[in-house]
Every structure is written in structure tokens, then in C-alpha cells.
Image: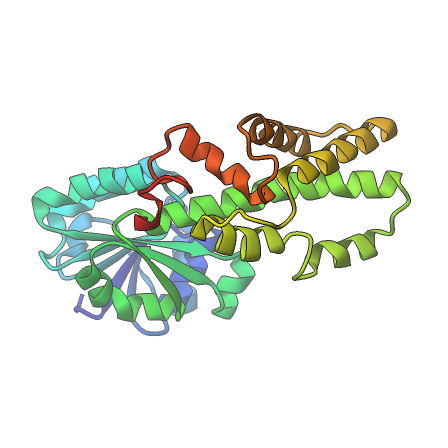
Length: 302
């Protein structure tokens, strides 16, 4: 194999598409536990199956797209002794920063570089080339891997040190999954209240209201800048939250996320933030001693 060869470990729904995109710019080696997937990749884009880690002796870039962090560690322990000294491992699997550090520890004795390139997309976006990569790691390693990253997608965001891209994806997904619960609760209340669901979707997706404003205005401006003067008081938000709980109770709609969120407004009022803009709930995390929380003097360093 030449320096223009990339190895991809993991040919699941996403990994197969990652391999397919890389194959448009590089010769490809692939590994998967499924013989069927290996044969499919060979037939579709001429990928060479990896049967022995010694086949990686001249392979500079290895892309991991595996279902569990333990799978990545197992693969790296097996292949690290066989990779060339200038090799870069590109972790696209969904993992945590601690997993990235464990992988780095496996590679360190061999002098090998590791970057995280977490995929923010569904399979349709990857197939269309509109996926995003959330990058973390040494700048020189990211630069060296840029041709491979570009082959996957040109939409890339560098978040910082090793593990930062992985953390960004986990946080993004956590928000999306939590919002899904809130939206399901809202839809149930809307249906019970005979609110047209299409109109509700329009309301919540309005850039000046609904789902957008807490992020694009309150967090981006008030929380980041520590500005809680004026605006909608936390006491008023707490009152609105009580009304939502009362509405759901009258409709016999069980609430989980919205009920839990109301507790935060109760805590904010008890902490004395009632007359400040309701974004002041973010200060609670500083009160609880979180080093990088809004309101902590260290916050703007992060």
C-alpha cells in the first residue's frame, strides 16, 4: 500500500458511507466483523479487506467508525505496533473526552497522533456530503489529516484540544434528545388543548420565539456576557412555568422534562435572582461551584 491509502475500521450504516466518500480520493483498506460488508465495499469501490494488521505498515491514516469506545481501544491496541511513525488516527465514533485520552495513551508509546473528528449528521447527510465534523486535537495532526477530512466532508469545526470535538457532539446530542422530550410534552398539551399542531410548530420554530431565543439571545448574549439586567424577570418565567404545570395537570398530561425544569426556576427564585432576567438561572451552576460555569470568574476562559 502507498501513502495514498486510508484504512477504515467499521462499516456500519455511517462507517460504510464514510468509507465510500474517502474512496473517491484515496485507495482504501477496510475492516469489519461482517464479511458481507467487506465484500460490499470491495465490489462497490475496490476496498481491500484487512486480514492482518501488518497490512497497515505503509498506511498513514486510519479512520475509526465503531459502535463502542471499547471497540476503538481494542482496534488501536492491535494495530498501533504496525502503523508507520507518522500515522494519524482519526476517531469519528461517538465517544467522550476520557475515551479519547485512553486511546491516546494506547498510541503514545508508538509516537502516533490521534484526533477526534466526531460526525454531526445522519446517514442521508453523510451520503450527500453535507455532514459536519467536530474536530479536536493537535493542530499539526489535524492539518496533516486535512485531505482525509476534506474527503469525508468540507464542513469542519475545530473546537480545540483532544476530546473537545467529541465533547461538542455529545453535548449537541444531549440537547437534541432533551428537547425531543420537551417537544413531545408540548405536543401532547397542544393536542389536548385543541391547539393546531402545525401552528405550534410554526410558533416554536420562529427565530424570535420558541426554541431559538433561549440559545441565540439569552445564552449567547446575556449568559456569556453576564448581563441579567432588565428583560423578562425570573419570577415571571417561574409563574409561566407554574401555568404550564397546571395546564398539563388539568389535561392529565404527564410531564417529565418540563416538570424537572420548573425546579430550576424555584431554585433561582430561592437564590434571590427573581428580579433578574430569567437567564440568571445559569448562575446557579456557579453557585454550586462549577469551575467553568457562567458567573464564575473563570468562565470566559473556556
